[in-house]
Image (cartoon, rainbow, N blue to C red; front, side, top):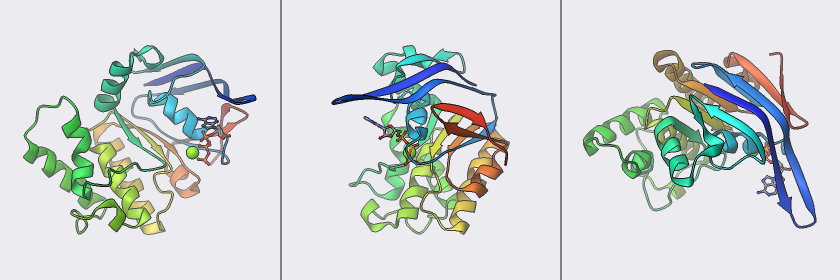
Length: 226
Ligand SMILES: Nc1ncnc2c1ncn2[C@@H]1O[C@H](COP(=O)(O)OP(=O)(O)OP(=O)(O)O)[C@@H](O)[C@H]1O
Ligand SMILES: [Mg+2]
């Protein structure tokens, strides 16, 4: 499902080049679940952005399914993200002028999906019930707590029934009960729909629930014991 080889990423800043990922490799089977852990600043978000075709590597290749995503044009990368991928951002990026229900429906309405709006709304409500937000459907993002915004972002990532979910701290600001709820939802999708899960987290309980854990260290991934 995911095969990254010789992956490197550097950022150019005035006066210096920051080398974040160095000859990294990653192999993840279809339907696998994995966690990535590592200290702040080690490059976890950088890696997810590459795997999600939001940014390009300095060197190396990334195959997702049978697509080499490092080679995609901007518009093909956008279509790839819309059709194949559910991305939960560390900064959740909800649209401020839309309510919870509308935010969750956005990816479905933005793409070239052909589906009656009522079906989209039905799926959005179903997901919002699963993350415990059935009583917040018409709230705007500024009226939500941090954890509610995060759970909205998780529901939004799932609306297109992605085959791959990349989640950057999906339980970052959640209490233990909501953490369990989000983990349950992600793992249920893995079990029932064969969705592949790659989760960046500082939360050891969430990491434990994935079948593998990698530690990102000195720009490379190393298998980490649970
Ligand atoms: N656009 C950028 N330009 C320059 N440097 C960057 C850029 N984005 C990230 N960096 C640097 O790359 C390193 C890795 O950043 P990244 O966001 O991937 O870390 P992270 O592991 O996700 O950290 P956290 O756990 O705090 O979210 C950091 O040192 C950061 O300062
Ligand atoms: Mg990060």
